[in-house]
Length: 323
Ligand SMILES: NC(=O)C1=CN([C@@H]2O[C@H](COP(=O)(O)OP(=O)(O)OC[C@H]3O[C@@H](n4cnc5c(N)ncnc54)[C@H](OP(=O)(O)O)[C@@H]3O)[C@@H](O)[C@H]2O)C=CC1
Ligand SMILES: Nc1nc2c(ncn2[C@@H]2O[C@H](COP(=O)(O)O)[C@@H](O)[C@H]2O)c(=O)[nH]1
Image (cartoon, rainbow, N blue to C red; front, top):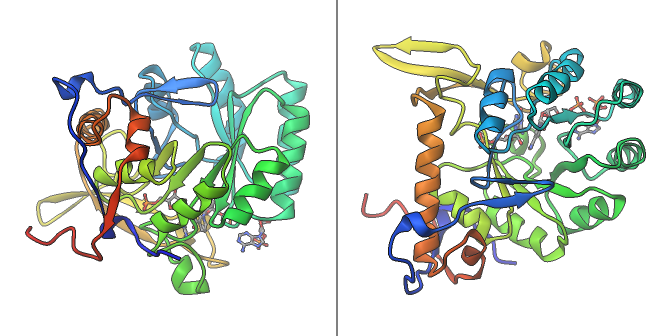
């Protein structure tokens, strides 16, 4: 098995066929809608809130609202629909989540996207929830995760999920690999490649994105969408508190399985940290789009899927050489 991560790979250029990078089409159809770029901010409390979700939906970006204020989710769906925007929410798998789905059905609230978001998604309890949601809300596009193996992708797709989310332990705020010894941390890109061999439906690559070029690499190895936490958490519009230290600005970022998120030290697999402040998220997303347009041109293509065909080399830990 070839084992590598984002920093170990370089994609090999093909002859350019476009006159300007602006001709390259970065859009992606994911579920019922088409988005500007294959990037989704992580469904974490320090990355997404209502205001940012509205802005992202209004501007043709994908978002997934987190599930850590469960009582606000139905109101969130109503608020998005009242503005004629799509609603995209997360759920867990505990008994009260079944009641939440029942409530949505009773109130005729149908989110366009639902993500089952648990640490270890290859589980009969996740499969039960997939069956339940597909029965109760068959028109919602259902994403399930997180997974890290082709077997998991096959089983979760067969259970009825419309897309899977791949990544166990590669996140910046993650300590799963240290506390449990398991996961795709350190070989997330290779794990994505393995999963793509089994996948018949779209995959979201989740965690480990440190540079804009990692988005193109994720697409090359099979991702339809790329979930990003730490690299997007440092913006004016993201919910973490702004903190100044020695004249430098930072924002708070914490893991969804951190003590900070859970309010207790039980099954903690995440940590709290500071990420550099980066200004407005619109500028970062525009830069990501421009970099991706450049990637498409280096791939010798015109559209995002052209990146999936390029060759690559493994250059172990050396892409920063020469910096
Ligand atoms: N992508 C990643 O690598 C990781 C992501 N996270 C994020 O943290 C948040 C909290 O996740 P999670 O703890 O799953 O949410 P929950 O607290 O909702 O747990 C999910 C359910 O699964 C049960 N469970 C059994 N085994 C496991 C296991 N190995 N890991 C997790 N749950 C298990 C839990 O019971 P009990 O709590 O009693 O065990 C609980 O009932 C999510 O947003 C998740 O995405 C967390 C860790 C890793
Ligand atoms: N193991 C843990 N993983 C977590 C936790 N909270 C979130 N996450 C995952 O990280 C990604 C974001 O990764 P990044 O590298 O872009 O910062 C996120 O989407 C989750 O899948 C956690 O507490 N523990």
